[in-house]
Image (cartoon, rainbow, N blue to C red):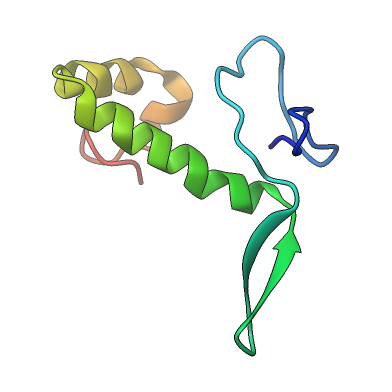
Length: 88
């Protein structure tokens, strides 16, 4: 997660060796009960932004099956993929 200035949020866990993408996750305007809005922070707010990036990338990639196969080769992710194409 990053803040509005592009700096890594203090609550994020990351490694300089493996992070390719960082998404906003601090002071994100969201809905609140009572038909109101409030700023929130957390990696839970960056997750949907990152997910939409992945979906867009997959929709534009002509070799989606090849890319998913690469994900299957990743030991950590392969334990989370239940049918070869779906993250569990």
